[in-house]
Length: 76
Image (cartoon, one colour):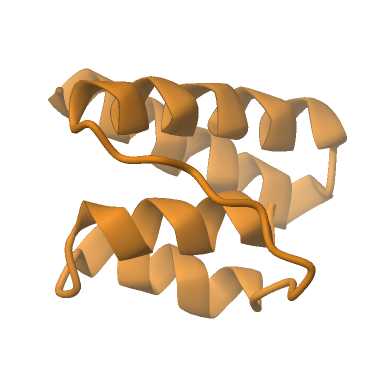
């Protein structure tokens, strides 16, 4: 599991650094894989969370993967 989370973190950092959409798409793919492993359903929302806050929430994971995966996925 750690390598999936590491790949998400790397791709989100790269996306935030240079705004290249390929990193956003890769991070979303890894998020979907992580969601599948933890039996989390990703729900797309019309509200787009701020990426830095969603990323911090994901790294700290204080609210659990069900919330943090969805927040970060929708921010990307």
